[in-house]
Length: 254
Image (tube, rainbow, N blue to C red; front, side, top):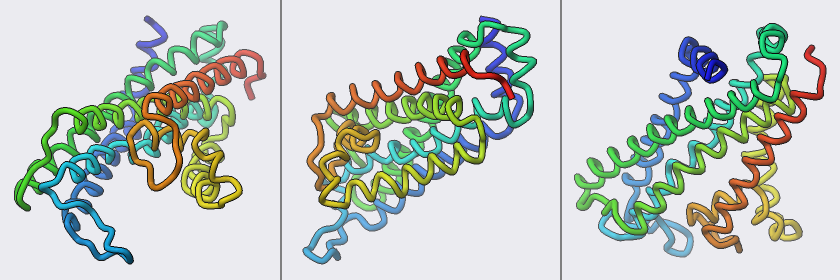
């Protein structure tokens, strides 16, 4: 409990966590407002577009918006771990608690909860904007059934990515390198893998493919089933946690 309290103190006494939660909420609100503004516009090359606000498809689409905030969750988790090395507090932390595994576990728990707060902020922003703006445009989504299920799964993905971020931070330790590397992977590597025919089949097994399967955001790609994707994504979170803990225990603090 003392370690958890210490991690929460670090998290709550720095502004970065608050800014990231605010950024996540604004990001979710912005995407939802954008989708709602163009809902019903069939201007695509083959008549594709965003479903009209009065349709179930619109509700299913905006319910996946919180999952877009996973990039903020990764950054949150990375910073939570790498700040110990960036500010040279890792050595005193491990001297006070020589059993390093406990420190990393405390970080994993603390930032999973922080990821939950981020997820709740993103979900709340999505629901608020879709309900108010969608209602003004003719019909707010029905937040029950499949739409509610998708919304909750999107929030779960945010929590898992926060845990993955902690693991990535423990693996890389350099804050700038870990953040930039994570962003490059999310916005460059995975899209390339998904778009190149020779590697497209492998995309389903990557974290992005698991996320798309979990939230139902197929994007025309052959993916795993919904809960298969969820299990795979949780597996990535567990793998990141285990690797981060093992390396923190075995590597020298520099």
